[in-house]
Structure formats: structure tokens, C-alpha cells
Length: 205
Image (cartoon, rainbow, N blue to C red):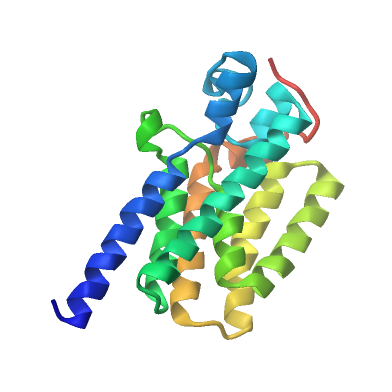
């Protein structure tokens, strides 16, 4: 097997592994373990850290948030170790986010991918992610809208990647991630416009 074919095979393997890792929905697993419920049937119906906070409280939410970030970091690391280059870690990161959003283990109904996105982007382009993240956090502190902060993070990341002249694969990945985020948050965007989006700290049964 020539080097190019070997790299392609390793890239495909990395993408598959990363998708399967991304498909591990810690929000669903922890909710079943802590409270014996399917968290997708409660609160906003989203299998992510914010809904975990509303339904289960701070401890489980922090665990979900950190574990979801770890999925993104793990996927990029797998891509780097298996094949390296510019594209393989990017594609593995995207696969992990896709797995979180549409998990094969849980009927393709997952979360919105922001925590996993943070793990991916921070691993690929730390400084742009840090700048966008600080602005997103400030917006959440001021408005208490996690969805708005998530959208700001997703929208600003490609801007700072472009401004800081990062490699093109990172720019394309950040643009795809941005589209992922806006598509998954489309109902939140409607609620934000209508003024009835849930604020951080609000609990729904």
C-alpha cells in the first residue's frame, strides 16, 4: 500500500472512530444514571449541558460539559496521531460534532454540539477559539442567553481564524461548524427573536 492510500485509509478510520466517540451522549447517559430519565423528554428536549443544568443541576451539567469538550479534543488527537496533516484532524473533529448532534447510539437525536465544538476548535485553533469564547461568555453573563452566546462563538470563530491567517482547512471547518450551530439552534433563534427564549438558571420540568 502506497503512502497516499495508507493515509486515506487511516483518515477514514479516524473519521469513523471520531463519529462513534461523538455519538456517546453523556447528557443522556448521566440523566439515566442520576434520575432514570431520558433527558430528551424533559426541559428543552436537548441532550446537552444547558438542559442538563435545568433538569439535573450544576454537578451533572459540569460533568456533561467537560466530557463533551473531551470528545472534541479526543477526535482531533486521533486524527493527528493516525494520519496527521492539516485535513485529517479537521475531518475527525467535524465527525465528532456530527456524532454528538446525530448519535448513532441514540436514534440520531442528540445535542447541539457547542461543547464538542469548543473541544474541536480549541484543539485546532486555540487563540481564535479563546477570543471568540471570551466574547461569547461576556454575552451570556450580560444576557443570560446560552443559545446567543453559543451562536456568537460559532459565528466569530471563523472570523478570528481568518483575521489571524490560520490554514484554510481550519477556516473551512469553522464555517461548516458555524452552519451546524445555526441549523441546530434554529428554534432558539426564533425564540430569541420572539423574546421567549429560556435564560440561564431557569428550570423546566
